[in-house]
Image 1: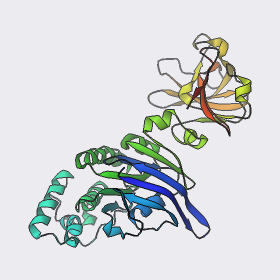
Image 2: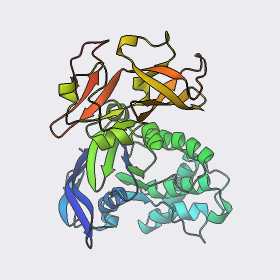
Image 3: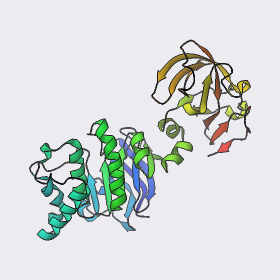
Image 4: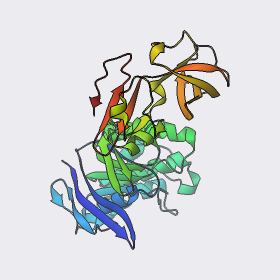
Length: 353
């Protein structure tokens, strides 16, 4: 493994930022540290970079323990959230900064900087100062400056946070392509799940200082291991009382909480829903147009659920009586977590995850 973190714990006064965090990262992978603000993501990144010292635990990079190594000795490139470009230096000089510190020759610096300017699409901007660049261009300069000294690892703290939505989407694709071409092990912090799912090879979900789950985006989405992950990734409907749902074993449901994704729910008029004997009765409360589908808010036994409905079907109106078929749900209790399929339409055996 290229990066190994073992039992990292860090406190700031009485606040415990990370709690016994352990993970491994393969060489060349692009990893997203994802979670709500204040969960410990940036603290983990700064400990890897050597900008914060863990209270306990070990950090290994390429098999070497680096806890006592200063930042400049760890072979790490760091892109800060605000980019931290040198305001009075040109694009060329910003990118060349780390190479100058390494005391490369002028010829080596010029060759490397020109190579990165071509790679990052900054040709023609070499003499501009940071304030003469757009947000997206500054982000590219920061990226080029970070990888110029050829670090082993690249760390990015919310790299798209300061960029408007349209440019942010373009830069996501650009960043992934750049990482693939450069082949550098990269970890980036984000609280935007769409960003993490689109860009990362693997995601680490961080919540209240703990690593909740690590895996590929699709694995985490389809097989959440904790209620927090199930509720945080994608859209979800949390339910506390699920003992009366049709098609699900009440003995299995007792003492459990469930999370139901909108795509697990089928909402329709009489005759539209498959397996009507397994469906609940509901009332439409709201309907929202979401471009590729309707989002329907429906009330079932006092609970409000959100479901998707195809644009090919008639639009439902608030107040309409409907059938609501819950195909499956995520079930969590203190002993286990599993996926349950509606037993009135499928095999009732639970699928453990």
